[in-house]
Image (cartoon, rainbow over all chains, first blue to last red):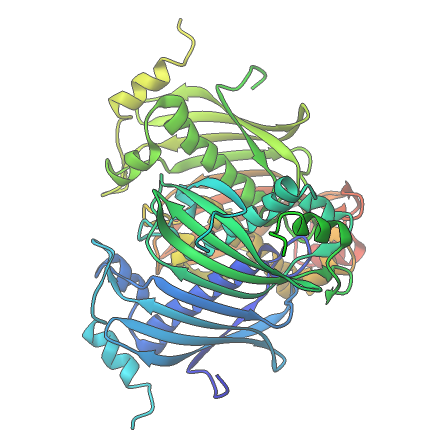
Length: 141
Length: 141
Length: 141
Length: 141
């Protein structure tokens, strides 16, 4: 997670992300995280996420999530949320996320997701085009 | 996490919890989880959570969260979300959650939260009344 | 809207409903409102809303919504959110909602929803069992 | 609402905005609408919304909201959400919103909001800098 993320997005912290303590309510971070995952598919991999789900009926539910919240974010902050691939398995993908603002880490996340057939909610091999697009981004060797 | 939870709530899975795949969108589970934490303070410990935050200005942000999602939940399901105390530190509290439906686990979560002064967002010792109320629920020895 | 609501639910205002101003963020009221609509179908009409949507593929999207926010709600408040039927048309249903706490109105809402076939998102006649269940609750004459 | 909006933002419809029917869950539209209001203050009026709320303790709660939902939005759509000022009163502001995609209206909204002192939740005159910034954008005469 020290290296530069593979894909990154700026996110403005909004009123709707914040709680009565005036800081981001952590489930909102996970909604942002899911947005970055979608954008990575669509913009980074060139595989429209809405098409993957809606037309091809392939889902990417989360199996495991670990988060470390390091510093609070406040309304008006513009954070950067970046994603890196740790490992691509047969059906699963392990991703690391780092959310930063002014080069200070706000939170780190580690996510294992699995590709599923949305008609059965059973796991399935990562589709070939998705696998190829991810493989092309990973260091070889 | 095998033992019976210390505090438990039934939750009906609603339309608003579910995603286009027709199952709970996982950040919604964490909003539910936060609701059970609030209810535990208010109903289980006898310490009104809204008073703790709003009047006493004591926050309970999450430092670390680990979740394992074991099975999908669908609209209409009535799940049970239970909480147990793993450890009470000087300023921090480690909690385990189990979400079940018909005795099958839907997800497990492990949360470390810290008590903070909401005026400074710095950690503070667990308030005495909170500590005493939690200690009274824990097995002695 | 002066008469007693046809169906009513108590709702505890939670941390997750509130904004940095410490009061309910109004879109959260509309999520609650949708929850009461679901509960009315399931508990009041005896027509499981999850079954209506998920199995029968009948949706109830909102065509028009009017809300008047009269007083703020704070974390810890237990409000009552009630629903009444104003009019049942061929495909549409006009509902009034009143949200109160200690007999003071927090907000009023007026909603026109339409029954749709979720495969086409086109309007359809109100299903017979839904129509009969609603008609049975309305004053005759 | 026929004229070009005063301020406009593109919004990508995400997984998290959509419901089990595969279309935007309408409270999510209102969260987007609030985001456009914030951005208009910060980017359009040059008055940082987070500063207005967090530092100056001026809130802008909604008094009245009317929405007409004209057509469904699906995951992957990029809609445009625009805002226009209908009227500026002593303490209140009346705004119209139009959400479009490919020149077709998805929803229209009409909002009356009021400026409040967040310490008391009472209405207050629109602050002078806000009033001047809005007045500068309105047609004279």
